[in-house]
Length: 145
Image 1: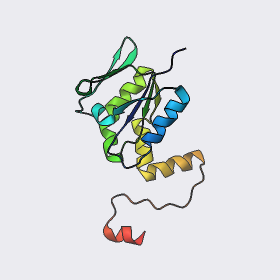
Image 2: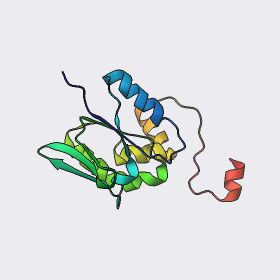
Image 3: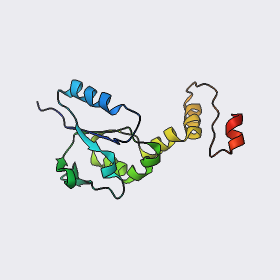
Image 4: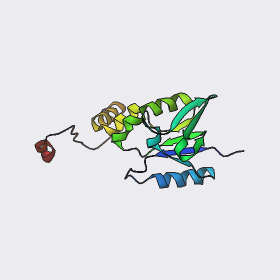
């Protein structure tokens, strides 16, 4: 049995710091390291190309001599301010049939906009601590919170 090809797509400028752990986890689980790709390549205007070919997702980054047909895509560690640039790529992932470990644009929006997160928690009965959500607050409002 062959090992699955896992594409780990992350933003190397993110300060989150979990992509190394994810890469190690993929290797431990599959026996092979993931193909690491820079998410910025697949953002609007990026150098990468993602397409469906013969019912499979193909990821190409010509400048880096990358051409991969993944079985699984892990799209993670994307800074909130860059997530919108990947919406088109995420829509293609949803249509591709590849096993994605990535949120939809709506899921990312809910995770980023805390008022939406709280609304989802309340809707689904998820207990959480009292939270103050500030959306573009004035200086005084932020200090008071």
